[in-house]
Length: 291
Image (tube, rainbow, N blue to C red):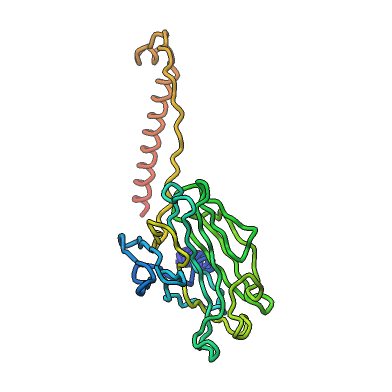
């Protein structure tokens, strides 16, 4: 009984040790129903349960389909991930789109009539066979994409030293292939509404995830969940055929005759096994008689 309790105790300790590594907050799910496209804002087309195709609109502002499903709040730290398919072979020269995220306040401002505070934008464009992903707030970062895949556009927002900061990462499956600098959102060239109070005093949540400035004929495929990473096949080197051996094979009986120790060891092993079983049998009988 003590040993069972000990095993259960060790199992519980292992479980509690693993709990901190679990992801307790789920990321926003950008499925087909999450996107809106009012008149002139482009189109949202369901390809299948995991893929939504998004195309730009014809409105003067250049706004495209957008989503307001996120409930992430700045006080908890914000991480938004949008999974986008990029294929250099399907982008024409200079085709591009921008994907931005705006932060909002809990209530509308009297000066503007809405809750908009500020935003960050990521610009994606084909240039001479390479797709470049560029945070507009970081002129030094231009992430090249040369491989087809479903890329994670990861937007991060958090409070540090009393200010709101942002950071962007581009991932291919589980690998970060590029990252922006850390930027203070109170500083240019981030987009901020100058008619309202500073960002840090008002921004509380994700307001809108918005496609805009879209000039790409086939649109953009957005995935609800990230597909599994393709398996990496290990290349097998071809083996050249060898010349047949001229050695004469010997029948098993001949081998046994040439190696008498082999047969002797087998016989000896069997004999020892029989003897052991016999002794065990006698032992059992003796115990029964005593009982």
